[in-house]
Image 1 (spheres, rainbow, N blue to C red):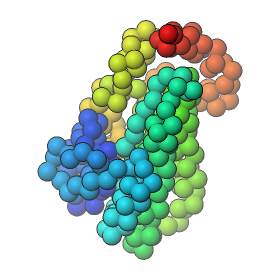
Image 2 (cartoon, helix red, strand yellow):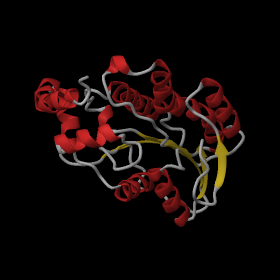
Image 3 (cartoon, one colour):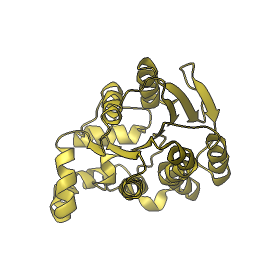
Image 4 (cartoon, rainbow, N blue to C red):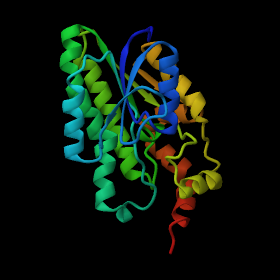
Length: 251
């Protein structure tokens, strides 16, 4: 796929990883629109909306339904790291809204025009955490697992319409999304973390090549397959790191 003159909507395009993806797409000739709460660094069209609330999401859906998009890239995300019982209700709701409900609702908003035009692509940026569901990332992992399931179901539903669906799953990326405790957890467990420049390039390449799914990082990508068939083995492999994480939250 060539990005030349393609109309691309990118959610979360004002963040560190999003800005890199936005720059690469515009460098390749795409016409990028960023949907975010914060104004993007790049001089691109900007739609300011808050995807963490139902009214904000519905306003965003109504806004984007006005335009004929070639690609929708659902990148926006938020994260909670800690005991699940300590996550505030407001953050719990926002986490599922941004990470799962928003991609589904925005997909609903762009599909009618894509179907009418006979082409398009939905790109959902998930996480390895959506296939290897990590302790202390319960809501983030489960939302990303839902996004993976939605992507697979949507791909089957769009068969024969000319609309493709790409699900990409990076492992941990060194961005501002990670709190100080996440970074301490990464240090204690020697967690692999990729630089955002490399992940931005891999996401864009997966979209350019029209891939259905792409999982980034080894051995994490191998653990995805292992966890699907032998989750007990992965439980045992992660147990020591889970105990280290728990220590970070002791009073």
